[in-house]
Image 1 (cartoon, one colour):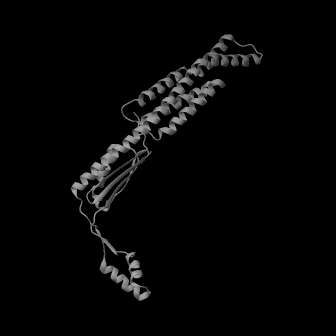
Image 2: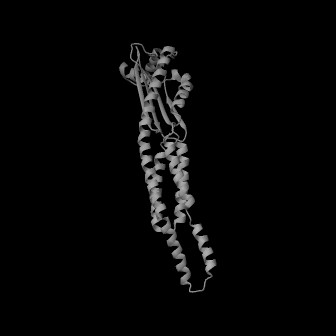
Image 3: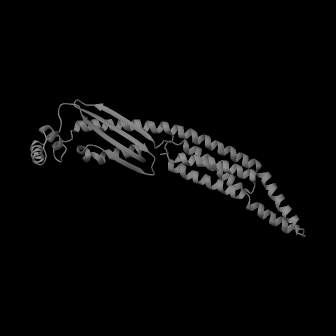
Length: 285
């Protein structure tokens, strides 16, 4: 079952004095591109958190956010009273104003507030890991649901191409007859005697040059292989991308050899279906 690289997961838990929120957003990318936002106190755990996310999500442009909000009475941020008083004294010497106005200005200056570094509470960190795992479950569920939509679209487009290929097979004898007739008419228009044996040999050569038997067989095999890969246990967007390239190669060869307008019209329709698959393929994990 394929998965989309687009997804969103969010999980929130309330601790006695803190609210922990984890958000995960994912978009398509050729590789894993992980951007992490978290409190400075948890930066030492960043590598471990990144590894957990990478193992679960594998690929995509990932935005990871860890937000911790204090909901209790305690706070690690305090007013740096000595510094603020010095600021107010200096401001009063160069500008007039009441104490409230001076205080407001001083609090916006550097080092007016000081934050004491908190040590990581191991129990709190275990809770954060559990919250992250829940958020990963949510985003993977989202990816699977998006993948189901993509899979149905791919299946329909592969069926459309198989139907178009069947039409190519049906009109191929007519195409070959038309090419033969065209060559015979070209010789007749020359109004010259032609060695029948030599002409027949040259005709066979040109008909073989325009023969698409191998391309029809390979294209049918590639379409079947694409459908089977869609049903595999793992989501493998890169593999499906490679198969799409092979499908495109066979379609292009049939188009270049067709030399017959009705068949070229079918080729154009197959190219259109394949192009829509390729557009959506960029989003497959």
